[in-house]
Amino acid sequence: MTARVDHLVTSGTFSLDGGTWDVDNNVWIVGDDTEAVVIDAAHDAEAILAALDGRALRAIICTHAHNDHIDAAPALAAATGARVLLHPADQPLWKQTHPDHTPDGELADGQVLTIAGTDLVVLHTPGHAPGAVSLHAPDLGTVFTGDTLFQGGPGATGRSFSDFPTIVDSIREKLLTLPPETIVRTGHGDPTTIGAEAPHLQEWINRGH
Image (tube, rainbow, N blue to C red; front, side, top):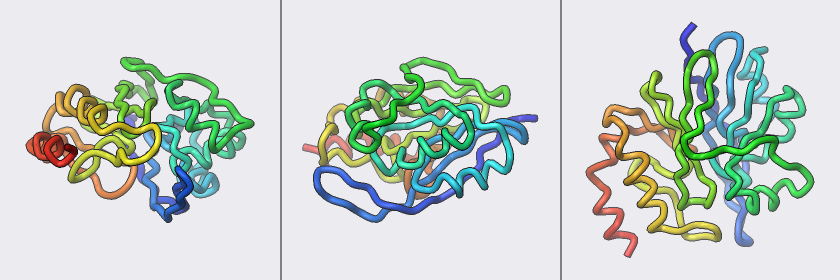
């Protein structure tokens, strides 16, 4: 059976640099009827477990370590035995949320994770966070960008551990080189496509200066 993408929205808070905001997060589940991975275990481990519907969870993949994307990861891992995977550059952010729990494995640029016969290629896309990654699934015609690329532009870079020129370079070099019809599944909000976002690159650069 070909892998599919299931979508869940969970709600909670995002906290960094002394501020806290209410947020809705996209949780993406990639797999078939027997096994799956979760991309960003946000806020509600029980809701994610229910969406898995008995499937074996092979991994919890973190696009980055802001608390709203990882707060439910240890509980989900404990309930399923799945490994939590994070790019090592985001360890300092991870420890702000989970000082007593360490991820089980590391993500690296070019790494390939396979679930239900479908490859997810790890793209290191720093800027929003030092260890931010996107996950390209060529067979599914989609890329999971976390908070690196949204409908309408790059993710936020106004807080600690972030950098605007870096996120623009990541988008230009790692994401806009994907086929234009590639569906962009984001960490918050609605999907877009690479082709829809590519024409705005210079506008983002100008806006950031």
